[in-house]
Picture: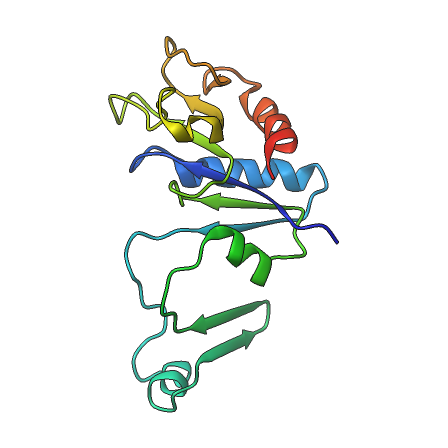
Length: 173
């Protein structure tokens, strides 16, 4: 089975990355693809509560990994020494996906879609003069007058999502 095709949705804080990921995943699934996601967090978080059974397995017992299985869901909790990149995570945990949509990891070498909302930020991350500019496959924006050398899709265009999924299908690797 070939490796999943990865694409990263990037943007500044509160630009709408999660909303775009959800829409992109929904449309890829609607088109018959097996889609999985990776979310990059800027801050550490603790999903396991002190004193709970799974917490005790790891923190009192010393387990390296704990899997919690419940009706309808499965969670892997693992200690990490170093942060893994999206390609490593996809290969290790999501290898049976057709597409892996990544939220964040803006410093990775993945093909990128930027969400740029002028209502929230004055300028996008995308810089056509930057060495990583070639990684960008599209920019989705609320700015009606923004122009770039990559496809610029506007939220005001009712077909923007369908055009974006077509670009992702062609450009994700």
